Amino acid sequence: MTTNLNEIFSEWQNNLAFREEFKKNPVVALKHAGFEVSPADLEKIQAMLKHDKSQDEKLDDRINK
Image (cartoon, rainbow, N blue to C red; front, top):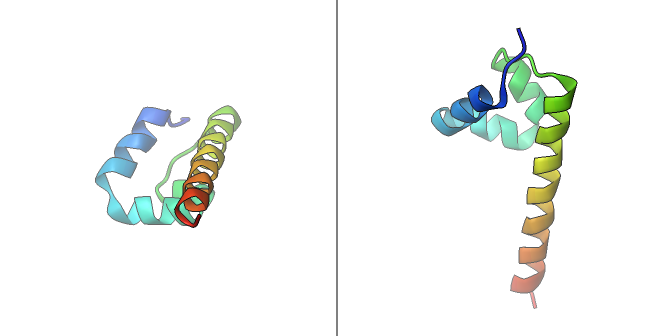
């Protein structure tokens, strides 16, 4: 059965080890936690991570000026 995004978010909120692994490699973290993610949901997750990384880089640029 495919996992929904709310289940993943709940795990992320409540499990520090999962959260740390997820930050390093989301796909591996999801597999280790036993989640089955649809390709569409995986695309959403990866898009969110790219957006977050982009925002972090913009903040770093402003801080370093």
